[in-house]
Image (cartoon, rainbow, N blue to C red; front, side):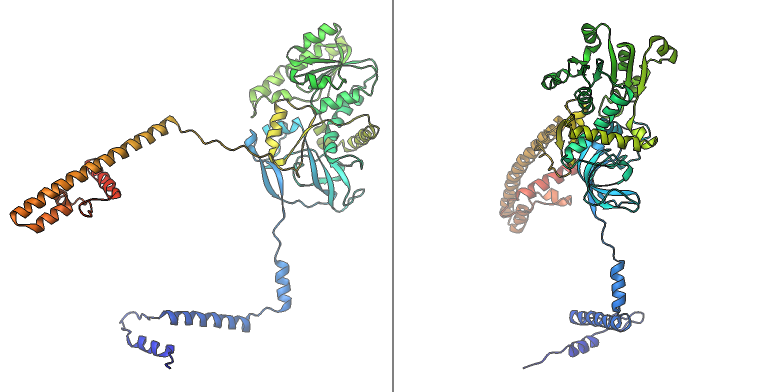
Length: 519
């Protein structure tokens, strides 16, 4: 048995080296290279073990330094002001509660018209983008920050943060967080707080509604409109003139809560037909020209309340013309005119009251009253529909089109609607024409190649025959292979032939080459 080692190979290789006066090149066999690399690796490992071996304490410290990647959550993020394309579902780092905050695992979110205006950038002091949308959510407390009293992990709550509500987790200061009754669902909690909070303050604090009064209510089919109707019905003998789109009349009439349903296109004349005196109260969430019309419908001692400006939302994106027109259409009413006509004007902006004017304690006491009415069965939130976070743009579109009756709710646990299959895009006329022209060119090239092949074979055959006649067989064979002696003289590529025939790819390549030469 012969034993082979690497030593002879090295010696043999060393003998074949050719020394150079300037450089020395070492020839290393693959076996030697692998051996050298392995040796270096072992040496490095040995050096590391000898000089840089980590002690158990050092290993523990290194593991402590390794930070786990931040956990992420889904959130509805506004990437820029404008259309629905700027509202996206993105992954964001999970927040942690700071001092005075609680971390809420969101189970349901409320959608309000104010969210549409934020998307457009049509509110005062809009947030910097990108930002997480949403002012209203309900869920369970998952963590509690320092200096928090009255709340603990597991509590069922509803919250009104300034933005960031439309996410799986949100950290909220406790002054904007409210306990909800045990029997109340999270969807009902997200549907009741903001809408009924606005409605309660309007009806009982600003208007001080009393028995026997009459009220004109715009957008009676919306979330706030339905809340106002239910709260008004806790006061005896109040007449409601509900203004909304004709498409909602049948569904709203079935509730039996609204005395007169009027289409919004010509509501002033319709009210005048029913009562020539006018109404005691006008609740306006539209603004613009409706301010003047509403004021004109007031009786002496009447009250006009503005609590929204949805007329500025006329399209998918912000229109400066619509905003300007909405405000310029409003007549300027002086206190002297109010004095002479015995009328009152009022306004309400919950966002300003809660976040800018420090009305959190007043709001908390009002929320407690609303939950008390809910426990007594006097109010029940109307939920139009629930949507997955991924379908928020469709939900916004429905509210924009004024097609909802009641509240729209987002549910992070819901699966998004299946997207319809995208139909194949039809080709443009230009592309179809180019495709047709390209096909025609290929057909012409094929015909030309076939004709060329026949001519070449014929010409090659003639030349071969002539060569045979002249006794020059070699020239005939060459002519048959090259096909065209002139082409060879011009340094053009000849078509490779097998028994005198070129392949299809060779024919097409040859024709293309000829066209380039002609060009």
